[in-house]
Image (cartoon, rainbow, N blue to C red; front, side, top):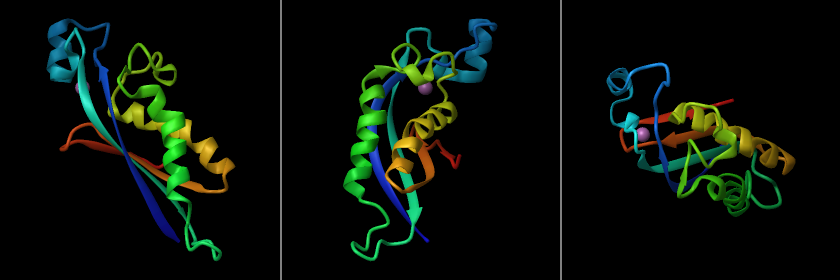
Length: 136
Ligand code: NI
């Protein structure tokens, strides 16, 4: 078993706030991410697939195809967008890195599986110091 990871980048705006809380409570929990007038992050996305090398290519999966799937099904929908307002698969959810990673996994999985590969991990860095990993 070998793992192949493709790294992509996108920029997006969001806001984290619980509508049942006061601004002060939201700031206490979400800090700058609760800013009422939005803010942005430079996200870094790592998508890992797994399998055995194909005897005809030596590849576990074609990294260029993986990049195209990520671009078509995820990046096009979220890059330079407002995650709370613009992104269909984030509607009604807290736009935390956790929920965004799960949403991205759900977008990617059917396309990667249809192409005969196995999705292993979606790792999403919201900042250089904070990231989440989702394994389905
Ligand atoms: Ni934020």
